[in-house]
Amino acid sequence: MIIKKLVLDGFRNIRDREIDTSAKQIILTGENGQGKTNLLEALYILCYGNSFRTQNLKEAVAHGKEGFRLCSVFEDSQGLERKAEISFQEGKKIIKLDNKEIRDRKELIYCLPCIVFSHDDIEFVRGEPENRRRFFDQTMTMYDPVFFDDLRRYKMILKQRNAAIKDQRLSLLDIYDQKLASYGIQIMKARKSVCSSFSSIFPDIYNAVSLEDRGIEIQYRPSWGDGDSVDEIIERLFSQRDTDLKMNTTTSGPHRDRFLITDRNGQFISTASTGQMRLASLVFRSAQAAFFRQKTGLYPIFLIDDVLLELDAPKRSRYLSYLGHYNQAFFTFLPEEKYFGSFFDLNGPDTKKYKVEDGSFSNG
Image (cartoon, rainbow, N blue to C red; front, top):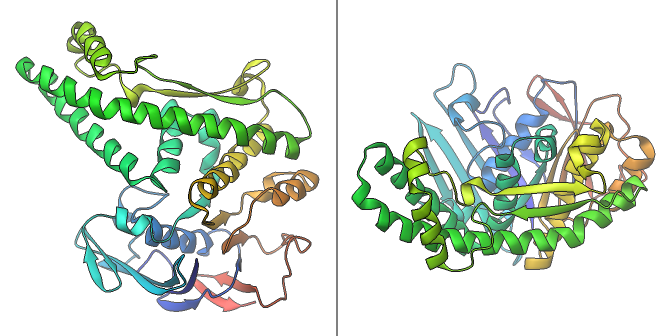
């Protein structure tokens, strides 16, 4: 899989143009605020149908424009040339795949899987539980459409149940409890499985890069405990109904699950330095890529947004050796940074370099 060409119109500060991306490595250099991350965001939107930087795509419209259009020509896992297009006009997003409009962005996700490495990834380690839930849910939706649908349906039923609680329509709760339990238990099983797989990948990479053995691991703590049948979950929901009514919301379920990062000292974030947390966040992404390869046999596209230089040189070198195989990777750097020439041939046919300045991309 490789993105061969990118066309942008009206997107953030990027000047409208076509960019040749037909190489294994694309290196983008430039000062902060010139458009490097904006290009990665455009690529991510073309892969997922949404942004990793904002939930409101209106924020991505260039100043003075009424909307934006993004288009990519890419080669899929079967070697076929295809086209993805996303436009945003008057608050409406339209996704086209091979010139045909699609209603569900799920179709887009499974065409061109990608993984973004960004500064905000550190929130997977030190942030709120919802950040880790979102990470593991995204990991599973990259390859499992059944989980994708179960998660959507669970969120829809949860919203309806919460509305019923707030409106005191209590006669509906038995129906919602049945549906919530049915979808929720499938989510729990999937999360337990992915956590088990991560626990066999994550520690080895972290230890190899850090050269320390902290006994680091990831634990899954479901809100519904060890319940493994729909009937058990329904009974649990019923027993907690008074609490839900008092709190005016559903107080238990997969939306309250926790993923814990622990080591021999207990909670990892209690004793870890900022550098150790940053490394752990990078390892999360490498483990995500390794897990995806295990499940699909495919290599996702990497979008690596200027995060590697937060590691010291020896750790950076070791981390790159564990980055994993990819068909294509986009790297952003400041002009004065070294581009890790020992990792790939900067002047070879597999690498394209662009200097980014004021939203323009020039060879360099």
